Length: 380
Ligand SMILES: Cc1ncc(COP(=O)(O)O)c(C=O)c1O
Image (cartoon, rainbow, N blue to C red; front, side, top):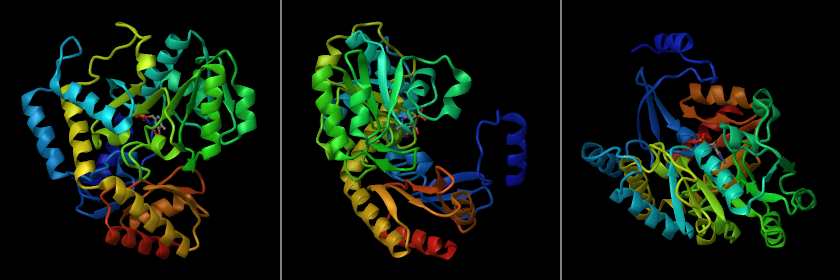
């Protein structure tokens, strides 16, 4: 297979939504990707925070393959064991009471917004500067970037954007009309900016005053990414709704929302649904992912390797931000840095002109972290 040929055909047959790096990947093993020409790359993107167990993890492959030959899809007209087991397991690790399954992050956000309106009987959402919650109409409405939103207006309204980490601004934005405040505990697409403890506390305090719902968007932060199972643990809070996806299925498409019993009580059959959501194959992928995260102590590895990355970056004179293996740092020309790293066999991603983001598999080893840092030092 020839990479140039694939790149040429992509340009001919795909809608040009994406600006891709010029590499055609064929297979992966652990933290490593291999292109069609057999070149090897250290993967510090992991399908944008998805492949938490690394590529082709043997136990994950076994469990998903077995389920693949047993049963893929029956719809939610019927019961299946993996869906129920996954909901029960998620209850244990998230501390939420009830779950609904979908197929992506943006779908989880859609469900959360609909539920907030139904449960509160109110219309307004409060979101934050630089927030990213997805690309479908509802999720897009609470996503900050004008460039993403403008061509698709009118979107859902009213939505008020307050400045992230600004308590005064938050106080001005929320009121008795607010259905929900939706927040990323660490902003990912914006370039890895963690929320301050005080800011999250204020969102929770104002909830008690105004009776809105708090939606924690843990699509990027969840499943060990930040060195804890979920960011809600880090902040020590109980949101009303959490949204999940990305790392949940180790790259297999699955999303979910978790809600409290109080929220669930106000919902009824027909309020929401999905044909594929919660299918046994996707649920088995998520169950296997959680099992391996637990067995291999990968949440702790995320914390430890995150620290190692940050210390080494600082030794190189690069100031980094983030938690666990969700790390951002600034360079002069991030696009150029990403391109040069790829040429040297390290896959990284930039979220803006200056910000580089690292989201490796949570299985990454000390040697692999050190290898990445050696390559970065050559690029500076
Ligand atoms: C915090 C957050 N919410 C929502 C989404 C949307 O998820 P998806 O791309 O699976 O629709 C993303 C994706 O980057 C995200 O980071």
